[in-house]
Image (cartoon, rainbow, N blue to C red; front, top):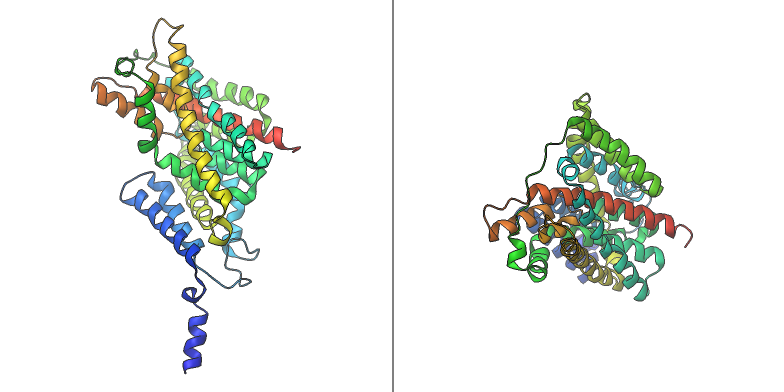
Length: 377
């Protein structure tokens, strides 16, 4: 009997665990806490957090249990991450949810979405300087776009061994927008600038909204063909929404299809943080560079808005530059709340969404350009 008890205990996760698995389980619980108690991006952080817990239960190798074992269920589900299927499906749903009216009504705000991508290219240079390989550096740099699916897609293509840390870093900073962005916005703007009121936007016709995704897919994908897997579904979903003749398809794209992809992406990305693979010096470096990338992207948008004001008669509220990152709609909401704290009658949400929408396009184009440049490296 004692031998049977010993054999039973020997086969449990309690016997196989070490401090690394305990650390990762705590990280998973923290993500679940942020998503459920603090309501920080719950649709992302809850699946990722529970995935981290699932992926860090110790097991015997060769049983087909772990996400990195070829015959495991988690490995098959993870194929959607490695192949880029889940990010493409999520972009389809995002397109079916996005309203480009504000961006079309005030096209100059698109410049702020482009300016925020400076964080991507600055971080690329920093990562190369710290000794990361070119493909790894490109994957880390895209965190600056604050777009989780784009970060996962590019990393899966260039540096699949870094999908876990890059995805966790990217989604962590997206969830922590209310913590990271406000201090940067206050530091780089004066109260007088934060009080600037934006003019009312003109009404955008249905025809304009239908033509835009067609023109955008041609311009963007001809410029950066490697962005087709992301921007193709994105603008396709948007056209379904705007044409009015495929409401059932648009509704499915932005609800059940997108939700299913989000569940599997979150859970498997979380499970990929298996402690013996995840806890490395590179992971720590990625988290540090990700914070730098996101901060620089936020600052770049704000500074560029201030530069634009030197040449514009109708000044732009520089806070809008912080919404140039593609964390939809978190960064736009934070910009609006910051404006409301200074002046309760200052409504910046729609203008911020214009910057936010252009940031999504900008980060996908940046990912496409990085992928195409790194193919030969």
